[in-house]
Every structure is written in C-alpha cells, then in structure tokens.
Length: 210
Image (cartoon, rainbow, N blue to C red; front, side):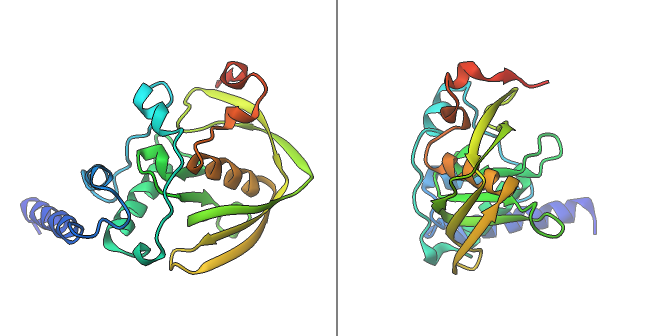
C-alpha cells in the first residue's frame, strides 16, 4: 500500500467518523465535537492550563452528566481514544486526566489503576464519591493543567465510588491508597476544583517542580 493510498484511507475514515457524528455528537456540543475531531483519534489533545485566562475559567466549571445512551457511540469513543492518547503522551504523561482538561465539559475521567495487574488506564463516566474514609494520607501532587508546580495535599485514604463503566453499566467500588488519591484529584476536576484548593494558601503555597 502506497503512502498516498494510506493517506486517502485515513482521510476517508475521518470523514466517515465526522459524518456519522453530525446528528449525534455523543454528548459533545458542536464546539467540543470540532475540537475532538480536528485530529486523528491517536493524536494527543492540547491541554487546558491555568496560565491561559479562558482555559482557567473553563477549568472552574462544573461538567455535564454523560447520558447512558451515548456511551459506546462513535463520537464518544473517538473522544475516549484522544483523551487516553493525551494522558499517555510520552512527552507529558500523567496518571489520570479529566475531560475538562482538554476543553470538553463532560463528567468523564481516565485513571491509571495502580491497584490492578499491569496498572491499566480505565475510563469512568459520571464518577461520584459516595463515601470518604476518616483516615487521611498526605502526598505531593501535580497536575497536567498546572505545569511546573507541585503541592502537598491531604486526601482520604479510601473512598467508595459509583460510576458508569465503558459499557454504560452502573458499578460500585471501594478504592484505597494512591489510586484513591488519583480518583479524588480527577473527580475534583469535573467539579471545577483544582488540587491547590485543598492547600492552605492556595496556589501561592505551591512549589516549583524540579
């Protein structure tokens, strides 16, 4: 297969995916849909960061609920692929990411499950923490949307979580240790909360990342 043929097939695939999304954006609004489909599904998206004024306002918004009916749709799966590519970007990797960090206001996150074999990244729709443990752990946190800084944050040692999985099924879990911290951090994002909000002194208390 020639390079020209591969390019033609790639463009045809993008056209098909975008066309199939015209009437049903999979929970995305028109602007988000254009943002997501601007590049191939394997290409990382641009991160929204707090030192950009419009980005910082968006990161403070509460995100929309993902309708169960759109889970598994072409458009949402396309976005899921791009969001995963972003958090796994070798140039700027993370252990979790939330949809608003790339400009999409959906209650959708990826978390690396360090508590599972092979430490997979998994997607969660409408995650909600239903219970926080009284026991607290303190740890140093950073954020892809707050580049160059870190801060000491206190989080619950364990949480109880409800969510919709990749098939749209309701699930409930108890999660502990560092993985619980990642969930708390990412769920904060879909509620418009940033990790330094939990630190006395806020952003001014952060330290420069080495």
